[in-house]
Image 1 (cartoon, helix red, strand yellow):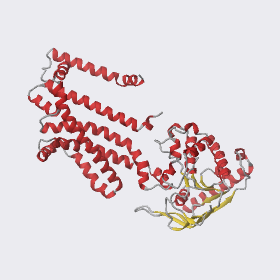
Image 2 (cartoon, one colour):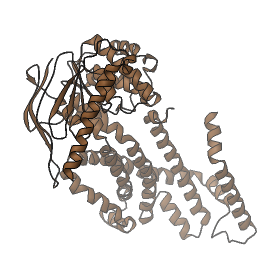
Image 3 (tube, chains in turn green, orange):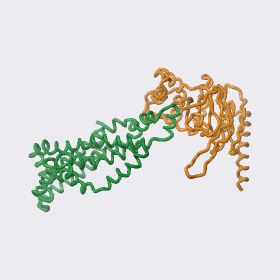
Image 4 (cartoon, chains in turn green, orange):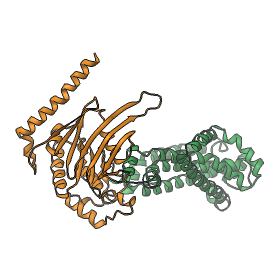
Length: 255
Length: 255
């Protein structure tokens, strides 16, 4: 009850604003001031999703989600391990950290055709794009978090006879969690974008593939249907990550 | 439990910058069951001495020994100025942390709870540090040092950040525990009145690396109304003069 109340308090203005916008668009399209192949009426997008939910969800969404999960999982495991390695070895940090940064400066979309070249039209070309785009926030979030371990805390634990492994487990990891979760939440959203971009470049299923095909057919409803589903999924994933974060960092939220 | 520092020297090594010799040929001793305070202007190496004794820093020359044995990390109880309670751990888990690094240290939860009860924190056993007031956190931090089970306690300005009233309470509280447990305490403070009220002996560190010892001949047990006694006021005045003179001399010699 309390949660619902705070939800309404936080988002009521936004919901009113968004509804208002949708009504305006609906009205503009219906009165034929905007042609429906430019912006479709919100109601026809909903109809499109309802009528085609089987292929949209069962075929395309599940394909996109599979790419998302594989890529995201590899990013988390690889990102956390790499961050820990950089934390323990100055040499590794000096060698790898710039490379991680540079990987973000590269225009990933321009790079993606290479993945098609390497992996063909298999799922791995999409997974590769997903990893490339979601790896960075996890590495940086985890590494910065590990480094934020306060020197005075470490000295105190060492004065009690703690080894470096002890301080890593009991101090650095818990202290890294807030920053790790910030990175993780960003990576969630990025990974979904990555999977979609991967599909644009060459795929036979998935919501990215679907929206591109619909765009080729001048079917704006289809494009918007795919975007709407992706957005909803993105919001849900983000909410799940935030819930996990709240649970793990409960000590931050207690009054 | 006699702590002996013999001919100890320590120099801060700053990369590229001038080296700064903080402690030169220091000789001092703290006897079993004694309460000794270190006072002196900033930069005279008070905190450095404590860090050398804990083993966090290694002296360049000289010997530091406790009952004839040289000291290593984990041999003494150390309490820094900031309470440094881990924010994600409950109070009881915080005060028992030393047992996680020292296998031979056997503190049961029951012991810890008894102590919390004695210092009036049992209600907060499972609370997080941020739910406690400054004075309460400082008491918890002291218990953490106490539950390392060591006979020598090093307290680095433990009450420096507390308001005047809480500070007075904590001083009486510390004295009562110290008297009962027969611990040896080496205490840093900037507050001359506090040094006079608590100590058996005061060691004044001069900027020229010389030290001066002052015995405090106030009777034990001491009560907070003794803070207004003429003996204490006289002693405090004497200390103040010693420290103030020093500034002037230094000031003129710099001209």
